Figure 1: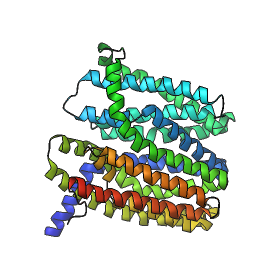
Figure 2: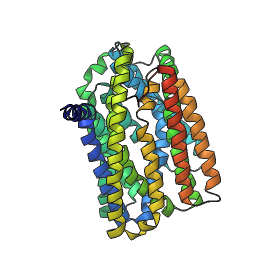
Figure 3: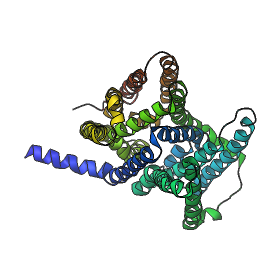
Figure 4: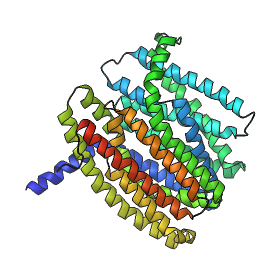
Length: 415
């Protein structure tokens, strides 16, 4: 009876904290994989490498536009001071970031030729991320999941057919489809939230300074991780080949299914952690994180076994080119398991006033990843890049767990 109660309690806890978002994220993964299969079919591994590089570099630019405002938005919507003017000020700061970022991009492009497609991609990703976190802060996990995990992947999927029909490049097609989605959605968004126009729409320098001082901590932690990934993709593309990047990205997308439970719970974890911490309910926070981590260990391990079966079937019957990359697959799966088994330690540190420590940790581990990869790509095979990625994940997550134990006295693995 006790075992049955524990199982039922575990299922209830899983559904409450990951249920709706898990379904939305699964839909996003399904769209992502369908797009991957079609890209490999129509454009080959080289085409997948081009798209992967475009998305990675666009994400690198995105963080300069968002500037940590996504996390601030969640905190403001979840905190006690839910005044509309504060939220509007964050939106105005985002708009200013777009203007400054555009001017800087044009200036840099006079000296270093960078495709304007990356700029467009960065702007679109920033808009969708900001929108997703708006709904995340309002605890609307379905809307958050749609804008965070489904929308952009859907634009890529549609772009494949547009590219084939009109005989234009896939990257160009992705840009056009995102423009169309922006023109459709944002008039509706502002109409739905027309109270915004009743606030002071002029930018106040004092409030601007306050927002930037608060958001730059989150900029550092988020940007370092994203930039390190962008640099990693650039190094693989330039030192090996676009085809090798295509294989690496394709296999990474297989392994990322393992992160589905972590990503699905993170939206709820951010809301709950902020709520418990703001109301000084530390015992409830400890219990919650403990339950979440145990759930993630079970679910991510099961996901790893499922992904291994899917990859075997795909490489054996649909794309034999991937048969030579089993070791790369295993290493990337191990990296995802390390990240999932550690639980939501990054969010926990960011929302418990330990963001400065987390910034330092992500900075030094990301510097390690970039420098070590720079050495590896010049001497060793792509498998060693993946092995080094596992080491990077271990450094970041094990150290984070130790900090969580020391700073806020939470042991996620306490039985």
